[in-house]
Each structure stands twice: as structure tokens, then as C-alpha cells.
Amino acid sequence: MIEAKKLTRYYGDFLAVDHLSFSAKCGEIVGLLGPNGAGKTTTMRMLTGFMPPSEGSAAIDGHDVISESLEARRRVGYLPERVPIYPDMTVRGYVQFWARLRGVRDVERQTDLILKRFSLYDRRSKLVRQLSKGMRQRLGLAQALVHNPPVIILDEPTIGIDPQQVIEVRQIVRELGRDHCVLLSTHILSEAEDICDRVLIVDQGKIVAQGTPAELQKLIRSNTYYVQIGGASEKDIRIFLKGLNGVQSVTRDGSGYLVQASGDNDLRADISGATLKSGYTLLELRQARGSLEEVFLEAVRTDESSQQPAPEHKKKR
Image (cartoon, rainbow, N blue to C red; front, side, top):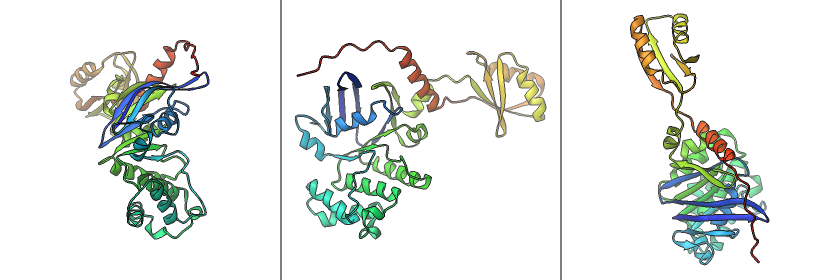
């Protein structure tokens, strides 16, 4: 559905997107995760035909975004970071306007269907300016989907809305991911972990890590262990754990403890053996999973340490 090959974009001499290559298929939610200025929005603008790439190519549902621009754009629903609204139009009139622009055949019927889908039908006669920020975000999704495109591209869809509305928008995105190809940009780690099937971590215009959230978490070998011990008081357990060789810190976590090792020491054998000898009961022992935040920070740190001076770019005349 989405195929990007060495996608590159310069702004003058500044390299904003650096030879990005990735693909996304139907029924998949792919997240572009990165800090502000990483190149996420520029990538989406190239994919949606808002700006041409300086180098490389991209295709939407098999149609090149440059040589078959109109066909590619017909297959995309795009929600930019700032929803393009016309405050003096009614909700229904606004969606009808976009439906006509996109060549929808039965405008009236499709408008009503999409307004009902996003719980906007009861507000169809309201002016757009009267909607809350969350409702405007729903309206933005409605205009992006009124022509039922196979590919949906969403740029920071939950930015600036309240927590309840964030939950609602995320649920909508999950539902869209069942039968569409969804590309979603975010700088919120928990959001990527919560709704994306696959994540591309982008920094300084390059993909520095990619995979499912679970796969990315495995890249970081955690040196923290969760331990639950029975048969002793909390004070005795703390003293026992802190007394083991290689233990850096012990922190209470629910009914157990997080034991952090110094360096790369694997403490599991030592903890289980010492617990048995002490006469305590080892109820649970596992390596704590690395978080997506750890993966992100490690990927960005690694990328920064490997930066080389960028080659001079010759502007194409």
C-alpha cells in the first residue's frame, strides 16, 4: 500500500529526510516515532503529494506519487497536524465539500455515513467554529475518510486534545487499522506502543530502528529484575537482596521488588540460589522488559554518536 524507496528531501542545504525506505500494508498501523524536527511531517507531505521528494521515490497503492500524482492522492486520506477547517461552514457542508473535491459519487449518502461513523451526525447543522478541539479532530478524520481511501496518513492525531478525547481518537485509529493501511506520526512513546503494529524510530531524517514494539523492546537487554519472595518481612527481604553481589539498587514494586544489577551482570542464578539457601520462598523471578522509551533513547543516542559531516549537496537546476 505504501512503498518508499530512498525518500529524500532537502530544504536548501538542510537535509530534512535522509534516504528513507520502508513499506506498509493493508491491515497494518505503522508508526513514525521521533522527536519534533525528526522529519516525520516532511515524509508524510511527500507521500501525500503536498511536496515532491528531492531524491528517491514513493508509491501509494502501486501509484507513483510524482508520475501518477492524481491517482496516488485519490487513494490517500490525510489528516495534517493542523486540521484544515472552514469555521463558517456547517459540519455537514464541510464534509460534503471534501466529498465533492474527491469525486465521491453519492455525496449525500456518503456524507451521512461518515458523519454517523464519527458520531457527528447530531451536530451536522452546527458551524465548524462551534465544535470543541476534540470534535474538530473527529471532523478532520471524517474529511480524510469520506472517499473511503485504502491508505490513511495521520500526522500527530492526538496532539492538543484532552485525555478522554485521546482515548477516543486512538480507538478510532485501531478500528481503521483493521481494513486500511494506516501511517501515523507521533512523538508520544506510549501512543506508539499502544496502537501501532510496527514502529519506525526516526531521528534527523533517518530510520534508526524499526520493528514491532515487542521486537524493539528486546533490543534493549534490561539489567533490572523483578523478584517476589515469600517467608520474610519487607525489611529482611531488602537486606537480603541488597547483600547480594552485583546488586546496585532495590526498589519496591507492588508485591515484589525491582533489583537493578551493576553493569551487565545476570543476577537470576545468584538470586534463586541465595533465596533457596536462606530458606525463603521464591515466588517470581524475571528479567524486567526494556521499555520503548529505552529503545528510543538508545537508538537516538547511537545515531548521534555515529554522525558524520553531511556531504555537500548540489541543488538541481
